[in-house]
Length: 374
Image (tube, rainbow, N blue to C red; front, top):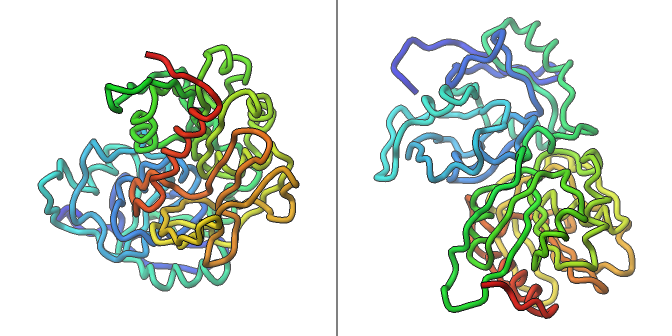
């Protein structure tokens, strides 16, 4: 935080709970920022988290107390800009110290129009959300009564198609970066809110063409891809316009791999339903069991919705489960080449236990007889 005079700020949740703090980052319009308040338990990677499009419509509360201590760098941006509504921290570092640092977090947020509130008792806030569930909130320099009214007027994320606010406008390419001595495959990636680190992993096995979320299946198949990737993204999978019909048109035609929202949308296209978790999975320390080997993976996660276990059909096998709450974390189809996981194997940020899934996608594309293209 800069050494300017402190500006008091309040965080007010929709249930009336009030937290005191200090303003940093951008000044929100009218002195009020609103969104669904969620907490993230990651110890590092605050820049990647803030720039993850999956946080559209949400205010991120960091449980780790010291945020901003190693600054920011352009390489760590996960998207063209942050889509989160705001940031809540306990202690905002006044000095940054890292050889990669190109700037401080406060200036980064001000330049990108993202407001923040520091000095909040994030332990109390996290326990409150854990007990009562994620809920709308408002923070800023406005009066407590105005903030409460704004929090109660906030729509949240249920039933809202947030993907349309984050997807790209036009297709673009991400060049192949893998070994020169192997066939180069082609992957079309649906941008439901895709992260740059995912593209870096995919580029190690294929050239990648990223397309907007609403691109028809026939248009994608006309590109003759070796595989199709369904990306992460924000909000309610049941509200994403046209996605299940698009995916249904791809299944059986080309290998499909989905992550996070892409996992939920694949499951929905297969006839399953989804539901909202009480406070979601947000952080880099979620234990997941890989059922075929019994291996425990520590995973990076960011989602508020999950696939209803009982709604999965007989043509779908559960491959991974969350050890904290038993939630379905991965599925694969038994009759078509398609699989997905709810967590983030690209680990931007987070552990790298699940990076093998990109190799599995490569193997799946190879196994269906696609030769690849030079």
